[in-house]
Length: 140
Image 1 (cartoon, rainbow, N blue to C red):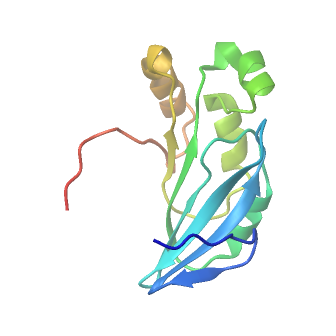
Image 2: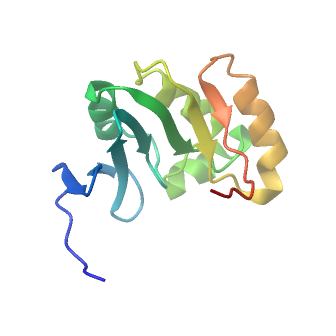
Image 3: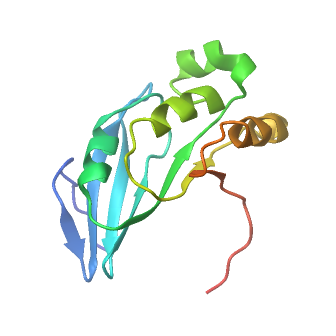
């Protein structure tokens, strides 16, 4: 195995897969990634609070078929989400306004005790792109 440093904002390829690391807003330095493969792309933020650079880059990326971001806390814990640089369904909805892509935007990273509240609040956003990423066992 070979480890290489990744330069944020610079696309690099591994075989037929291109990756671009993009800084996101979090308490500690954190990066999302835009993955391009076989003419399709996805954007994944990982842990993030309200952010902008990854949306600017994703909006310019061809054929984005899905976005995965987070909604860690329910709306009634907005202060905790802000303090820890995470999203609630309300701020997830605000992030949707920055995304011009017509593709599903999945909320992941839900704190287990609040999953049902978060899922309900995401559905109540009334944006057809807003989805909840369900944890399942996937096989190839």
